[in-house]
View 1 (cartoon, rainbow, N blue to C red):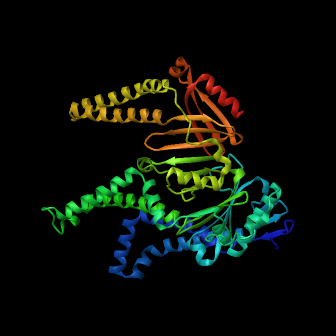
View 2 (view 1 turned 90 degrees about the horizontal axis):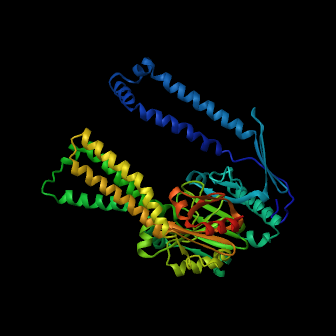
View 3 (view 1 turned 180 degrees about the horizontal axis):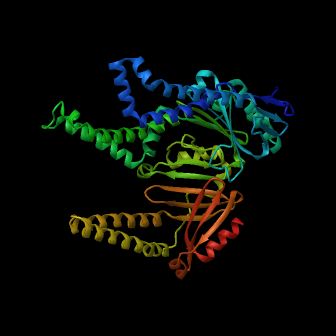
Amino acid sequence: MTEGNNSEKIRLRCHFSSIFESLWKFWAVIAIALFNQIDTIIDIARDMKSSGIRQALAQGGIWGLAVVLAVTAAVLLFQLLRWRKTWVTLDGNLIIIERNTLNRIHNTIAVENLSAVNVERNLFERIVGTARIKMDTNSMTTADETDVSLVFREDKAIAFRQAVISRMNQVKGTATEENLSEDIRPETIPENIVKSGTGFSYGAWDMVKHSFYSVSIFNLLVVISGIVGSVWYRTSEYYEPGALLEHAGAVIPILLIFVSAAYGLVKKYITYYNFSVYRDGDDLHLRYGLLKLKSYTIPVDKISALQILQPTLSRIFKKYQAKIVTVGVGDDSTELSNLTMALSQEEMMRRLEVLIPEFMGESIMSDVIAEDRRGIAVRAVKSVKWIILIGGTAAAVTTWTDVHGWIAALCACALLGFIILLYVLSHVSAGWKTGEKALVLMQGCFAKNWTVCRYDKIQMINLIAHPAARSMGIKRGVVMMLQMAAEIPYMKDEEAEEIAAAVL
């Protein structure tokens, strides 16, 4: 196969290791089943210790093991036959996936319908020298999942990916050599990109800062509380070396919550490790990951929207991060769509001008029209249902339990106050503006974000009028795109109709 020959037919079979990657799901089910029977397993282990292995097997233990091994062999044989009968063919501008088992499958995908061709490598794949190709199409029904996932030997995966992207660019009429000349290993960045200044890499300290600015406030408070509580307990006059073991049943759940929250603080660092992004021709390339290397190639014309995000801590420290909305990125929790880490507004905008200038003509964060003031009145009307529900619950708790009325009332007021605070914050953060090519929407509560929705990528727009809003002459709406929805804040009826007309 030559890179420049876009008419050559390529026929491949997935790497043999994909059989074992599928087998782990079966063993995961077995592990869960064994965990649910942990008491029985402990009893069997004790019997083996007292009576010997032969006696335990004679009592029937061998049959459970035999069944597990037999089912494992059957699953392995099924995966082997499935692997032998499955072929992937790149023929012209068509990708054909055929499986000639009893249940025959013959799927054909035109390259012009592909929105992303990505590469990822987990630890197992890096050990055995393979890479996974993940392809997504412009389909609304499968926008939240990967359409095609294939495992090849690393060199074949890179060559196959380059051939597919080359033919995608040929269909679009762009120069394939410029986009693919140095697109090599997923974890590397072409040297010419580094020198040209069209790409950006982030170091370890950038990852640490981004992880902090993006972390959940709840996780941060739990970790801080756990550290403070541990220090207090250690230095307390009531501290006894054996006391912790005596109360292990109560301490372990708290410890698990603390560990889970602490993991949330480091997870982003592990996921974003060695993050880099660069623009090459009409494509964006994203690369990151420590335990699982990921490499995305995203055609700019497939991007539906640009998001500017301010999580709660970022909002406090005046930091911003940019993400894109496109099919093929963000399908699962390990896929990220960031274009920048947490940066100042000026630095973020400077980098976006290099990466996606197509979206930067809308003055994203300036001249945004605030939500109509009558929107807070509609929210006040909506809060009545919460007053009734919370008040009724508090009265029921006081009547049917021993909880004092003042405690129930205090809890009810605190909960209702929090709900009202959310309504107020959502009103303050809401806004909108119409540009020449895109609709800018602003929303949030404790966090805040701006969404730039390209008119030609909007699938549908729904305008909604609550009875109270209808009486005030305002309405809100929802913009639907291939992979996300964005809320339109309360505005005058004529303004909402203008937005609908601009979208249509």
